[in-house]
Length: 93
Image 1: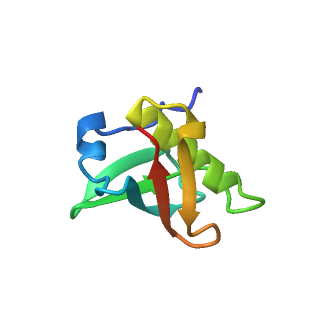
Image 2 (image 1 turned 90 degrees about the horizontal axis):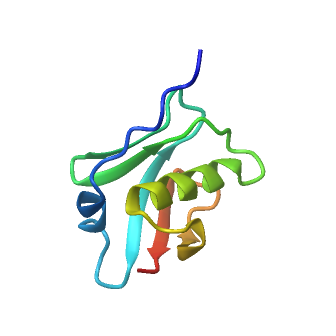
């Protein structure tokens, strides 16, 4: 059975969470059963299947954000939280 595609919110809703300096805060759940990006209580929450080993979960979150924002993954830079669930990305629009 094929895995379902990731659940993504509207790109405009995600862009609305980017601050004036281009930063986007994300709460990450690695090792999830499904890949999803959702907005809960005004925060962006990312669930990825990848385990937090060797940056695999960070790469999966970057790819999920890029897909939601219709950007190349290279336009997202991890600023903080390489080993934390609370991450901050810079969005190069």
